[in-house]
Amino acid sequence: MPLLTAEHITVQFGGLAALNDATVHVEPGKVTGLVGPNGAGKTTCFNVITGLQTPTSGRVTFDGQDITNASPTKRARSGIARTFQKLEAFSTLSALDNVLVAAESRRAWDKSKFDPLVVAADLIARVGLTDVSNFIVSTLPTGTARLVELARALATNPRVLLLDEPSSGLNEEETAEMAQLLSGFVEQGLAVLLVEHDMNFVMNICSFIHVLDFGQVIATGTPDQVRSDAAVQAAYLGTANETAAR
Image 1: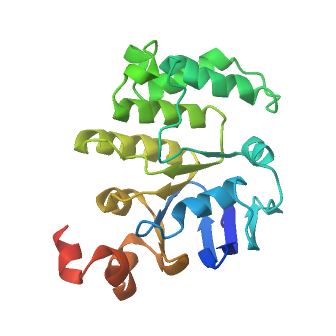
Image 2: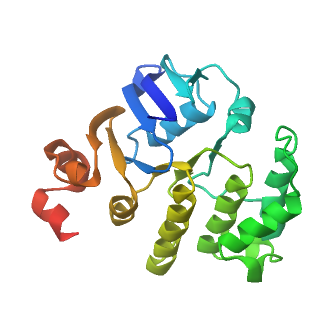
Image 3: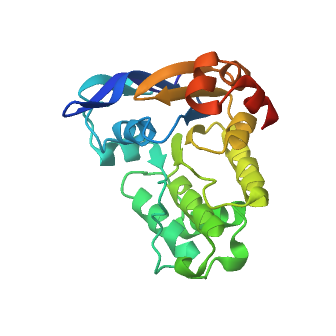
């Protein structure tokens, strides 16, 4: 049962349809991939889900509620968080303080009793950054800064996490560590929607994948189903032989 659904979404910019009748759903406790060539509409889809872009038509539902017209703030408070393709961490703050900002802001709507500093420190530990927790983010390598951004998003205690190219700038070892981290959070029930160009990363971590091309969903299915889909091979993955060689 999907926790989040963007249903029959169309986004029109003048004569250009960034999304055209696209449907994407995300289930709890799973990583769902959203892949496709550059310009396929992936980030636009993220913006529609998080309320940064109003769809021309279609609707977004979260936990059975229509949130199509809800503000970005209301969506965040209901349990939707995201990261961005371009790092959006507070570069002049420490790693810990970046996460603490999110944990503190959560107190505005989360009435449960929690200590923001404890939450922030715990998340910094879980993503493996305790040793650099007091380092200013601008001094950290890209891969480390992405972990800070991940921890900051998790500090809002989301039910759905949208990740926009989390492995960008990471080496092979860091990418494997990111996959392991995400798997741990997903095992606790977190729903993840993942935009990513590293297809090995996608195929290894995702339970289900949606493939976008020119704003349309051209395929949905398991990694094996998507990998063998002729339309996906033609639009994105290359020929069957090329795909098998990757």
